[in-house]
Length: 285
Figure (cartoon, rainbow, N blue to C red):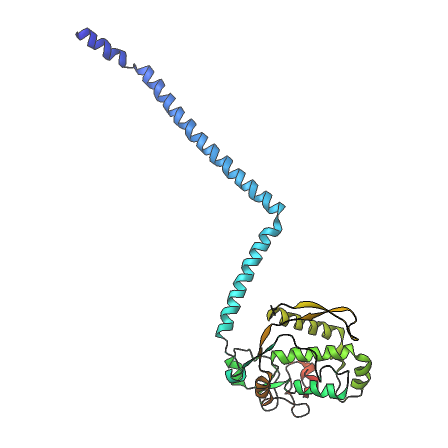
C-alpha cells in the first residue's frame, strides 16, 4: 500500500532538470506573448499613423476647412456677444415699425426720369447723410476714437448705415444716367469725381450686396405674365406678402437733428499730411 502510494507521488513529481526546462519554457512563453502584444500595438500605431498621413495628403482642404469653420464659428460667437453688449445710439422711440404691402408698384416721384424733381426727392432722403456724434456717445457705442474725423466743435463725423447704402445707390443711379448727370455734376461746386470711379462703384455695389444678404428678405414673389405697352408679353413679379418696415420718418427725424449740412461745418486737421487741412462736407462723402 505504501509502495503504491510512493509510486503515485513519484509519478507526479518532476526532477530538477525537468523543472528548469519547464521554467525556461514558461518564461519564453511569457516573453513570446508580451512580444506579440508589443508587435501588434506597434503595427496598429503604424497603421493609424500612415492612415492619418495619407488622409492629410489626399484631403488637405478638409482639415483646413474644418479649422477654418471652427475659427469662423468662434469669431461669429464673439461678434454676437459683442453686439449684444453694444447699445444703440438711436433711441428706441425713433426706431418704430410700420406694416405695408411687400410688393409696391413704382410710384411718383421715383418713377420720374432724371430731373430736378427726382433729384430733390433724393436730396431729401439724404439730408442727414453725415451726422455728428459726441465723444461721450462714441464711448457709449464702444467705438475707437483714434484718427476719427472730428468737426470744429469737437464732435465726430459719422454716417448711419442705411444712409450710406442710400448714398451708394444714388451714386449708381447717377452713373446709369451719366449722359444726364455727367455734364451736370462737372459744373457743380465742390464736385468730387472720386465718388463715381469704378473703384468707388465696386465698393458701393458690394456694400449694398452685404446689406441685402444680411437683412435677407425671405418673402415669396410669384411670376405673372403681363401684356402692356411697357412690358409687351413679359413676366412680372407679384406678391401678396406683408412687410414689417422701419418707419423712415421717425428715424429720419432723429438723424436730421444732428445732420452735418454741406457748407455749414469744417473738419479739424487730421493726423496725416494729406488730411492736415480743414475740409468741408462736400469732400467727406
